[in-house]
Image 1 (cartoon, rainbow, N blue to C red):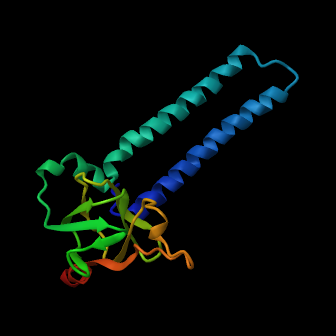
Image 2 (cartoon, helix red, strand yellow):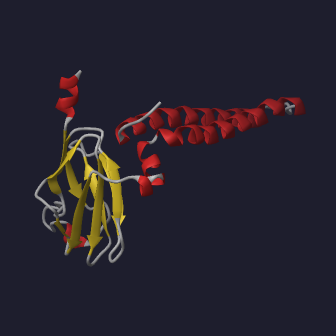
Image 3 (cartoon, one colour):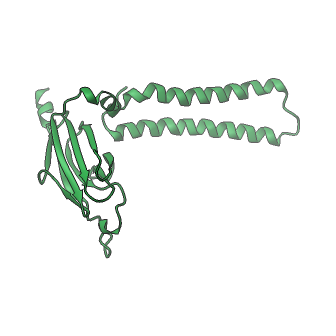
Length: 199
């Protein structure tokens, strides 16, 4: 099992956590039902109850142990000192405005990209979003600190850039509420057609 995008990962965890939540609700219902019974529960009946609790704990912990390495960006974070990015983009933020290396940052699918982002005044966020509003990736950008994000794009398309941290009212138009830090199509990922053509 391997996930390439945050959407795939979220779909899997949504299903897993829904099942897990239903199991937890079932034990609460079981406990509530036993509280309403007139006759006292015998000690031997408690053994399945505690066994079920142990099963839930083992299942919850086990889920995270066995799925942490299916998240694609975890291994990149752990081994990033050994990874040389294919491209590096240096970006600065000041007065709620982005200074980008180019109007559109073009990346090839599967390449490792390093975003070096620096703030000269406030704490901002660096967030890339799909056209449907779902997030691809993000990081916090602290002023006068090194802020970098190593990322591999596994999907093609154009992605919008905005701050994912509230950086004061100047980030938004006071009349329309429009996000003034939103940069449409800031990153374009290409190369999907080449893979299809090579099959």
